[in-house]
Length: 244
Image (tube, rainbow, N blue to C red; front, side, top):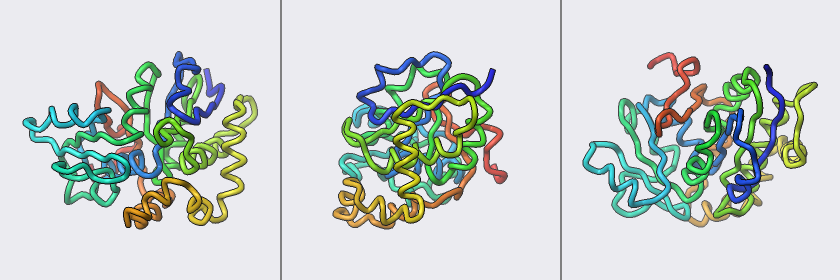
């Protein structure tokens, strides 16, 4: 077998329309959950447990885990941190398990539970991610976390970047994949300027966290690929940072 198709789901609300059989789902939440997950595991976090709701996150309080919660771009009061990549440095997460809930990303992960494999994608790990995806059998579904079931520009552009790297003879693309690739090709010469138009970019600037935007648009800062195993995101062994 070999890679057969690459499809793009522009919103989690559309996931019921896709067949999960023999599918590798790549969950994308560029600003900022998937970026922070890649960065955290690259910096030595033992695991990241994604949960959909704040109460689920609080249930882990007595287990000695770090608790992280974000809603509408801001850290939820009473939690250790949110989903800024600057909270996932070695000093904060090395050797620890983080329980994380976010507005969009962790919900999208939960909705992909029927896929054969679920991994996280970001610009930070795009080369290792696409290298690994080329070796997969069956179908790849790029799942854009979006914003509260609406399409988001940054997630769609990243999906297009992955499609551009995976496109090859014999690999079937759906219309959304072709559209995302076209959008990426239009944006790639100046991603920062192009994505400044994104509604979530404007939301983050209002919260004075513009530095997170620039950080999340860096390519190949890490090799780590987070993969879901028994309810936890851990690093794929073959892409684990050398220091671990």
